[in-house]
Image 1 (tube, one colour):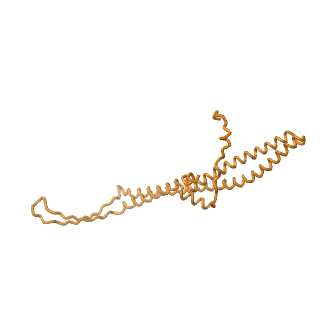
Image 2 (cartoon, helix red, strand yellow):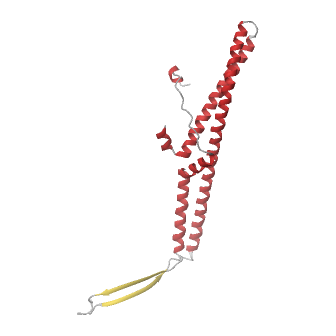
Image 3 (cartoon, one colour):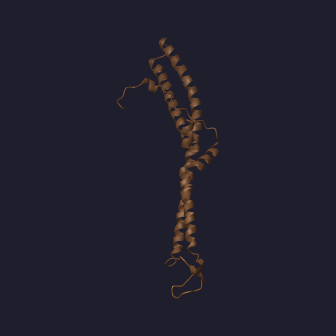
Length: 216
């Protein structure tokens, strides 16, 4: 496809081995949910909206302040004695037409949307981990069965070769045996690829890319 010469040494290079799946599914789900950066970002957004709601609710409460002053001297006349003053005041931020109430409702809607995003990301991670776990387990079982079938197909193909040379098998029978052998080899390669992909992706989801890269 690329117009390059086929390098036999590159074709014979060993592919990556599948990652072991040692933990049960629930443990893997808990690990994935705890370290997933998308979920952490969605949770942070929800926390931000909680702070916004608290801030906007505070606008409904008036602010009461007390200020004390002591004045030395007076620009109007000389030799003025120090004077003490005490101020008590009240201020509010209700907004025009009590717009603070609508601001609070808007913040609540944003918070609800952030929580729904957290739930959506949780479902996405759960579905991915469950699917990859099922693939990793089933591919391992399927691979073991295919290897048994491969051994049997090899024996049949070798037997048909000998019988063809002895005149007891036709050329078509011999080619059918070879074709079945090749089909099983292709199925083994496909299953190995699925096993490697699902186990590595599962490791990244549950341990994080940095930990998996370091371990690799």
